[in-house]
Amino acid sequence: MIDVLLIHPPNRLDVDLCLNSALPVEVVGYGLLHIAAFLETEGYSVRVIDVPGLFAQNFTTEEVLSFIRSYDPELIGIELNWLHFSRGAIEMAQELKKSNPNIPIVLGGTHASLFKEEILYSYSPWIDEVIQGEGESSLLSMLEGASPQTECLEIDRIPPYDPSVIIPKREGRTMFLNTCRGSCCNPCMYCLGNSIHEFTGRTTLTRHSTDWVAEQLQLFIEGGYTDIGLQDPWTSGTGVDTYVEELATMFDREGFSDQLTRFNLECLPGALNGEQLHILAEMGVTDIDYGCESGSDKVLSIVNRPVTTQKMIDSIEKTAAQGIIPITYWMTGFPRETSADISLTTRTIRRIAKVGGIPHWITPIVITPGTPLYKKRKSLGIQQRLHTFEDFSIYSQVKKKQWAWYPELISHSTEEQSVEEILMSSITLKLASLECRDIILKAIKPLEKMFYNRHPDWEVENRIFRSIDYALKSMKGTYF
Image 1 (cartoon, rainbow, N blue to C red):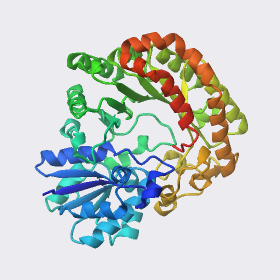
Image 2 (cartoon, helix red, strand yellow):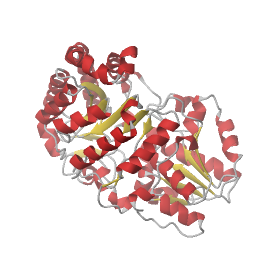
Image 3 (cartoon, rainbow, N blue to C red):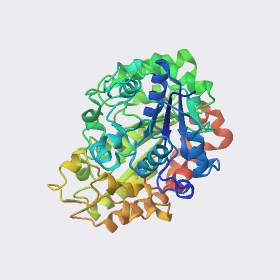
Image 4 (spheres, one colour):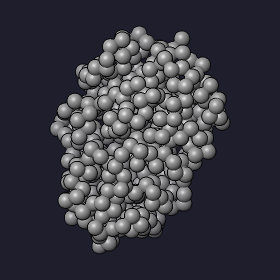
């Protein structure tokens, strides 16, 4: 018997479209997994069904639905954490409600929270509730027969998750480590991260204790997962120095540095100094994703990105010097961004390549309701094209194309750039990045010995250079 089924949906209930989606469908949100862990500590039995994972194992749509219907849970929760799952989440709810209308079906996640009222108005025959913000206490309240009670629990009361709860087993997948909750402290206008407290009520960034992080890593390792990603804004706010030192002490105590094959972080350029980067390198960090976004200081200032191009170059140079691979992310379609600004970004990508920075993600910016940029769009000359949940459901319906030419997914135009010009700017940056391969190889070569001394298994597979080629080749078809 299973009390609760939590479902990671596909972009659509269409196997071919899911397996060839323009946008990645394989990441099960760790919010869903922590809810599963919390409910299990409260005495409920829980399973997480990864529908794209079942499709990848040659299940048909009917076989997936039949498998899910074979359970008889008290409650079904469906994850809607990113725009491109919107149609699939609704379709899952419709199909499951048909077979058993008495089981409550709940949606949750960032984009469910964002469009709560519209979802409940349009899809109330199939969806009983939309949980805004953190879902642990809300789902527990519903299981106990009460109305959802949104409450931000003391952060270490939210337990680490066990990957074995996911069906099917995620062989060889990266597992994502969540170290904090609350709003990001950076004021970037295009991101929901600094206004997430409007949904959750958790107003300050709060980090898990390093003992909690150790328990989570141990669960990963025991499950055979040694490729770890840390993609939350853990370096945001104060206390980064102390937290890095505490993490390093814990890693040394537990011997994690020798047990992880990859340890990837996400970071704002300049958030970590040389000493902190050295500590992270000694801990076993292999690569850091840096959101550079634009090579124009004017554009960065307009959207309140607390970074300069010089700070990017300095940060990435320091990262590479410590034997950590720096990977860079870029966007186009900002307000007031001109062809001259795109030229500056091209130049900055090349300058960063000379110090070892590998460009990977290059994408048109997506402006969503709830962000400061959406709220101030008129004053910034933004002509928004997508506004509603129904508008953004187009993200669920697009197959992968060469060079990621998706005009239907562009959320806006600006006074300076049409939809097509935003897309062309993205392709211009991709072409410039592909031309940087030899520059990057030359910059990385002197650091090869240091890196392989720390990560000898990477040397056997020549993974530095495979990583460079993967990043450059995969960017052509990626949207975000």
